[in-house]
Image 1 (cartoon, rainbow, N blue to C red):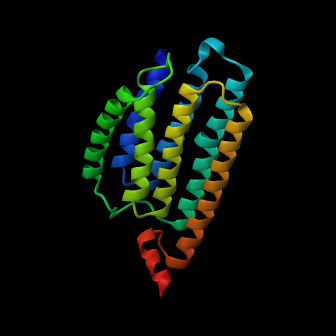
Image 2 (cartoon, rainbow, N blue to C red; image 1 turned 90 degrees about the vertical axis):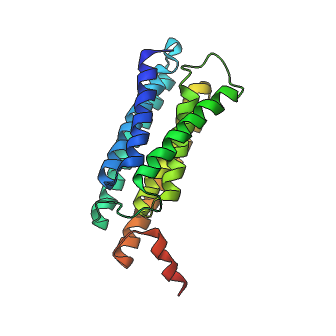
Length: 214
């Protein structure tokens, strides 16, 4: 267990709650960017006793993509869509924070029941990874804006990444880079989709796409 890893994990939880309670799309994108930087720190500190070129390379690439490239693509899509806030989500923000608190407690309970490899970098790793994945899934379901749902997809992937980095230190570098490339392509395609949705419908509310049936 390291102080840096624990600090990164606690900050991940705080950014998750910030995402659940924020109406500003730009702020949500910046929170996701900060999560990308935190995951880079976690990659370096998770197994610092056997720090290798692989770990450093993965930390740099993941931080570059998650902390800079993806947010840049999303900010460009946000600028093109000319929207600033998620006004009327399916689930309100106060209720979202309450559900998030319950989800965090459920993640702590579930992690105490799962058979896990030992030693882990921190006892907080698994509950934080589960909670981050839940936060991403919740954003996809509970928000209307297509851009917020893309943010939710990234947050969910951040939770999976944190779990993998902390529990499976011997995953081949090429496999991890392949996953990051897949996420990059997905965000790129979704950014294009958001742009075209905003151009065709003058908004990016996914619930309004039902008119395509007519």
